[in-house]
Length: 117
Image (cartoon, rainbow, N blue to C red; front, top):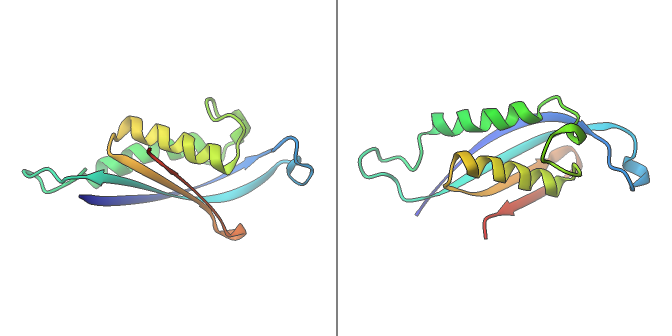
């Protein structure tokens, strides 16, 4: 079994209602690692061409980068947990081998991991 990962970053703003310290609009830099797992194709030697992985993740990045996350359709409340699930769902729809999304906000020392199953 092989795992490959691709990373991307995005910057976005959000408002979190119900938490006094987060009720004002504020932004973060997010770092995302998407991991695929499986057996490489015997003919190509690839689990998945990394160019195809990068293209699929670029679409997700475009959906989130420099956006107000509260306005992103399908995301729901823009928590770290919901962002990880949202990215996982979008990534797995394009790349069925996706098994994990790790979302980090290093400036806060925070990480959220969403895994399949």
